[in-house]
Image (cartoon, rainbow, N blue to C red):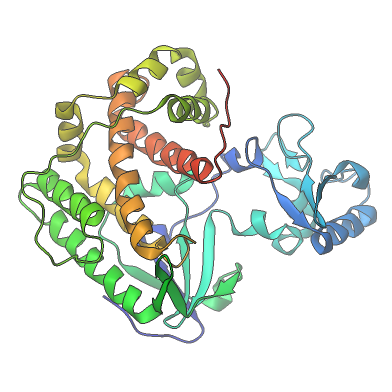
Length: 358
C-alpha cells in the first residue's frame, strides 16, 4: 500500500480516476438543497448582473436564492430543479457563464470530499452519486491509491485533519487510522483472491462489524450474510429515491407498492448469498471506498464509521437482491441503484429526516 507523502499531488481511489460528471442531475433536484454562503451569493449575483439576458445562462438575481437564516441562502428550485439547471442539453447554466469558480462550494465538490492529512491531500467519493456507483460496478477492484498533480485538480480541500476521533471521547493520531485502513484494504484484497469469494466477503464484513479494530484477528466462523428487512421509514425513503433515479426511476415508481412490501419483507438468505457469490468484487470495492471515509471524511468516530460502512454494504446486498428479484433491473443495474440509494437513505437517516411520505 502506497503511504508516501507526495508534495504537489492529490491521492484518490484508483477506481475513481475516470470520474467525470455524467449529468444525472440527481443532486440538482429535491430532496437535495444547496446552501450558499453570503460571499458566494454576492459573487453569483454580481456575475448575473453582468450577463446579457440573451445568453442562455441568465437568471434574474432576485430569483436565484431564498433565505435560509444564519447568513446563508439556498439556491431556489422553482420547477422541481435548481434554478440554474438547463435543458436540451442538460447542463449547469451557472457553470456555463462563470466556470467552476462561480459554483457554490457544495456544487463544485460533490460527490467529492477533499481533506488535507499528514499523508497529503486525499479525495473520497460519495456513493450517493449515481456516477460513482456506476464506476464501482464497471471497474470493481481492490482499493488502491492513484495520484494526480494538483495542477490537474480543480477541487480545493475543505479542512485539515491531524487527529481522528477514534471512539467517543478518544482521539488518536492520523497515522494509526492510516495503518488500520491499510490493514482492512489488505484483508479485502485477500478476500478478492479467495476461492470462495462470497464466503470471504461475508467473513470480511462480519469482522468489520464485530471487531473493527482487529483486521488481522480471527474471522467469525460460519457467519452468513443476513437478509435485512427495512423498517417502514427506510423502505419509504428507499422507494422514493429509487423513483427519482435517472433512467430507471419511472420503472421503480410503477412497481410501488409491491416494491415497498418486498423491501420490508427482505430477501431470503439464499438470494443474498447468491448475489454475494456472483458479485462479491463489487461489494468489496464499495466497502473499500466507504472504509476510506471512516474518521477522515466521516465525522463519526472512526471505529463506529467502520462498522457502519460494513453494515451499509450488507444492507445494499439485501436491497439489490430485492431490486433484481422484482425484475425492475438487470443484476448490475440493481446493484448500482442499491449502492446509490442505500447511501442516500443513510445520509438522511443521520439527519433524522423522512424525505418521502406515503
